[in-house]
Length: 257
Image (cartoon, rainbow, N blue to C red):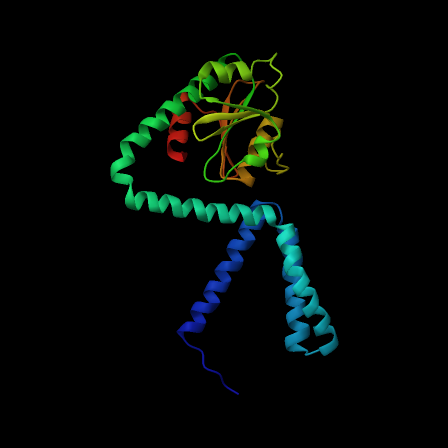
């Protein structure tokens, strides 16, 4: 028996393939690829049992498990789902901003960004010369309220001296991360998720792994000043940019923010 196969079916197959590919890539970046492979194997087995072999009893059991499994998947991937939804929301807001306000707010936005960026750059350069370790996380579209709650609330204007004092070696907050949100120093001494990526060079320490972890779990920009070498690095979207100069750091923050 023949069946019709047209352009719509080709588009359908291509869209499903793209959906599976981007889901696989997203899960691989978030280190949940094993769970994704298990779920995909279960779905394939369910389709074989219920659709191909038409096993009624076993198919009915799998149907019930699939219904419950939907809730289980939401629980397992709640962080990834939240990140995905925040990314969509941030993208839409950015598009709307470009569409309606870019002509009126372009110069003002750059002025505000530079006022916030330069104290961060100058503080990082000063701490790098003194080999004072630091970890600064700059929030973007995805809120970091859960990370802020792990530290001490500061809620102060971005200031070079404030940043340097917080990361001074004798300061009780110097071991944690500083969170910058909405152009203000929101909190300090915060705890970040540590990345266990085996591709991270061994010479990079715990601060770098924490920076990589937050960049993998959110869209934030994480800046690290190494206590051992005094070098400045940045983690963005799960990728490191190492040995940054003042100009490099300023350019990265300007582009990303």
